[in-house]
Image 1 (cartoon, rainbow, N blue to C red):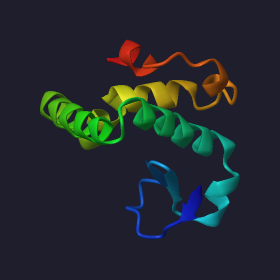
Image 2 (image 1 turned 90 degrees about the vertical axis):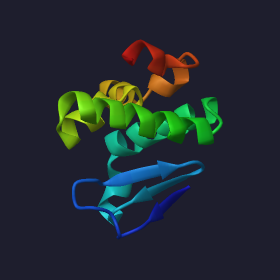
Image 3 (image 1 turned 90 degrees about the horizontal axis):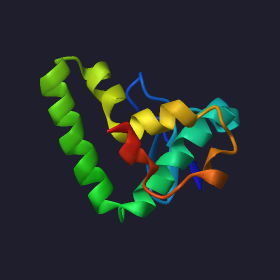
Image 4 (image 1 turned 60 degrees about the vertical axis):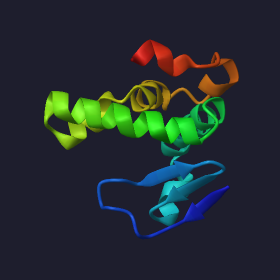
Length: 106
């Protein structure tokens, strides 16, 4: 389910918290690449039973932030984000995605 939520920081167009995709503006709903990116996160969250996904996400982000010392670099280096960015343009990716595919992006 996609929900319009206008409280995002300006750098982010969407955020996924299973089972919802929150988008910043109505036009984002038509952005198939963005929606596919967020659907990849939905799949990751299901695989890790939601709570473990966010726990892992935060710890990996903090580790990468210490390592790279730059917010955006750390964010883009998170394995979940790397998988989503690498496959967001492939609208058939989720049809063929193997379980726990984010592992190869660690």
